Length: 150
Image (cartoon, rainbow, N blue to C red):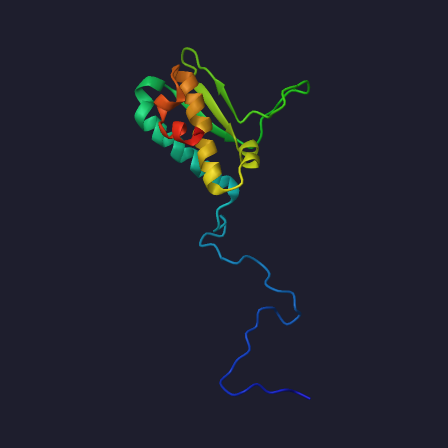
């Protein structure tokens, strides 16, 4: 026996006819070679880039040539005995070789429970490394770091 629906009323279908649910991407990309939705890695890179751009704008004449990079995890030696994993790395340049500041994404994300925590942590890590490079207190590089530590 087939039940008929009331006229003018349609049943919403949320699954396909074999009850599998939606398959494939929820958003079709404009360019099939790139995903439409940004990944967590892309969002983290954008966050680091915005912090670095803000600091570079204010401190470029004092910093000189600095390369910034984001890597997923640090490569620690087998005999690493420190209790924590580094969040960043700073290698001072010499001569024509630029200084290099690397931010490690996974250890930072692991320590943060929300987007605001992540933003504050990235700001703190980058500011502390730039302050180390300049030989000044982190609050001098960016006063927001002093507000986060309270």
